[in-house]
Length: 141
Image 1: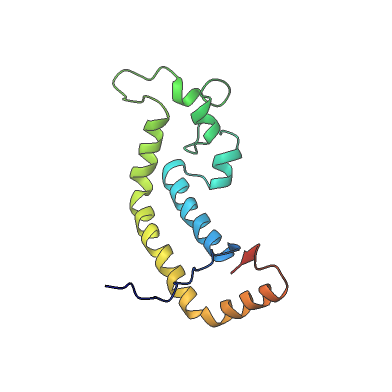
Image 2 (image 1 turned 90 degrees about the vertical axis):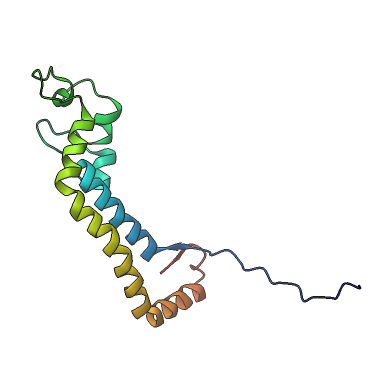
């Protein structure tokens, strides 16, 4: 049987530009995760100073546990207390904030999906304006 000529499938171009709405949603989800586990926001978790005696945990405390401000993890715990380090504090934070975090992990994407659907006409007009200004390759809504 002779092979028929088929119409060549068109390739879709890759999505260009960084979505500002997508970045906002990602930041909010990261905030929920860092609040639940470390009781701080993502920026303070990455670059913040450790606070002695608080339940806030920073990346610096996890990576370099020696020195000023890290004593709460590595003091000699009283016998039978079960405190072994940063993991203990993270588990305490998750137990205290885990239910609210789970609810937020579900509702934030739903809210963004619903909001984007409602605002679709405005978003598409804004993206067209960005394209006319030759900014669409960099940023979009």
